[in-house]
Length: 150
Image (cartoon, rainbow, N blue to C red; front, side):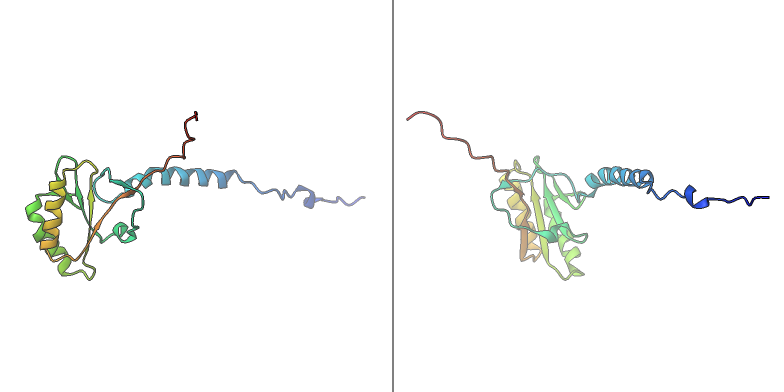
């Protein structure tokens, strides 16, 4: 009678199955693609483009006070539309229990200058010393070759 020998070591598969990892990564990619546009704080404004903007990372914080001036003259404090003359009182209320007294203004590039000045005046009347005007970096075009001819 012969002994039956089992060779269980030959059945072991040592290859790594990456299919589940790829599935998880694709799901995460889709989630980030959907959520990222919703992370913008406040209303959407077409900011003025400048060559050398000053970086203001504090404007992206949760508790930052951001005022948006739209193209048509509407003023938003956070996500709420507000009349420019009511802005002073709202800012005073928000700054009463806040250490940092910086207010950021996001003005549309085509907003009327008078609307922006009125907002800045109302913010200054609330006792704000630090006022940040948010802008975007101008995209520089590749230098063009000089036109031919001598």
